[in-house]
Length: 296
Image 1 (cartoon, helix red, strand yellow):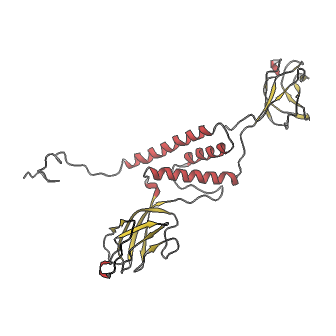
Image 2 (cartoon, helix red, strand yellow):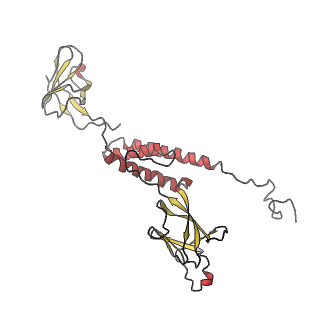
Image 3 (spheres, rainbow, N blue to C red):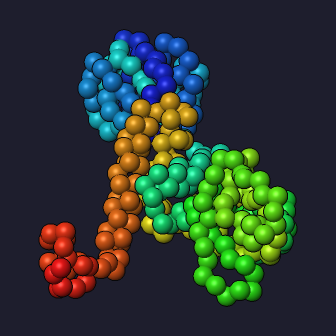
């Protein structure tokens, strides 16, 4: 789908000659720069039997080549020859970075639309008085961590339910250790999580936006279910756009359609989540309790 015509050469008035009923010898006014096996378009020759899509048989000189085309033995000319480039070849070295960029694009679209695919969960324990959770601390942020979605805590070994922590821009300072039994809040900046520092060792439940790892070679696997079509069409868009292909916009449109189908699939899956149905008489009037028929 990346076919294009890089240049044209003209044919002199007697430059098209057919012999032996099928062997055409074509002469051009300027060097044709063709090779045996190239596909060409022959157009506007006075004898129409020479015209059409042809395959170069042999190169006789910089301005002369042959191809086969059945017809009467005749001499003609004029018209033009256009070599047709049938797409481009991409090595893994070129294509894999583009495929990874497409993978990250799909992840970004999913995250923008609140997809649960882009959420993961991890449990870890912060030592007493710990104020940071970074890539370099112990414990450290998960390798696929992109940003916090929900952070909860409980005192280590208490067996209590996790209590949600609020997110703040500026951490409070507590001088009295009696009020530092829990962290209570966290801040997210400089790609790290920061806490006031609890006097207790704290269990942390970290729900976060996830970044899936890139592939490193042609055997790598993209781990988001159903993402193959979107990745393929966006990779094709990146590759064709880099070569200036007129088909780049076609691939971009295909990608948008593939992403829409992937997002619709996930939206339909969420529609099957269990939900609680409210009673028919709930909310009718301000003097009714939820879940009862008692009237005050």
